[in-house]
View 1: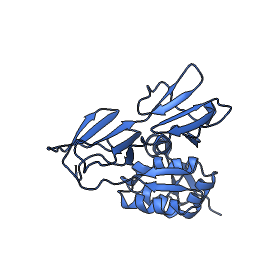
View 2: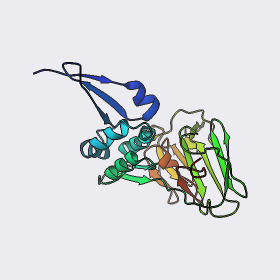
View 3: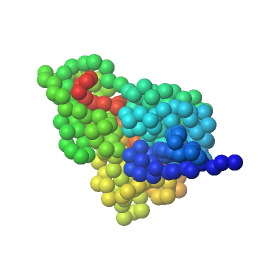
View 4: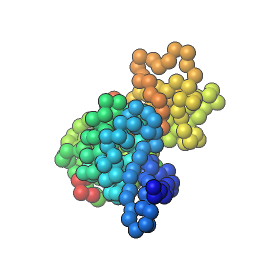
Length: 249
């Protein structure tokens, strides 16, 4: 039986999209096919995604814009829940399939409806901010302009006057107490913050891991990993969105 050679494109897997892109070459070397996998195929959610959503994963890997959301899809495989920008059609199809897996909870990030004029300002590389007012500019402020970001908008944005929206990079911070926290406001001295540090609890825009004999309080939610956008979340007075910019900017 002829065997094929499987090449792992690791640079794409780790540096850009989070998912693993595999290229299979035929024995003759003149035909190629691409398939896309997830980082944690052993988890219940990851296994279902691999078995039931293979065609949607492959289509997303082949789409330049859709590949930007694959790191978010990977959080579903790892933690069972994720929030994904579904502006792209291939991404929307993938999220719909993933959410059909009983072990997965994939949600579409809330799109912004039309409202008042929006002016945005980029504070490269870690944040951008937008507000409603009397003037509008064309500065982009979304998940593509700020790396590893979470975008949070006031509940009334952009319809309410003087409402705000911002995208900020999620960073992690370790403390000499042995605990760690991930949030848009952490100093970034830690590369990760997960269950290896202890119990992880999320609430109101922050996520912390540390030793705790009592677990998470009633005001927080237990999570597996504080590095995830979905785990950190937005404050209770805001909603998570994929774009703070005016439509078409």
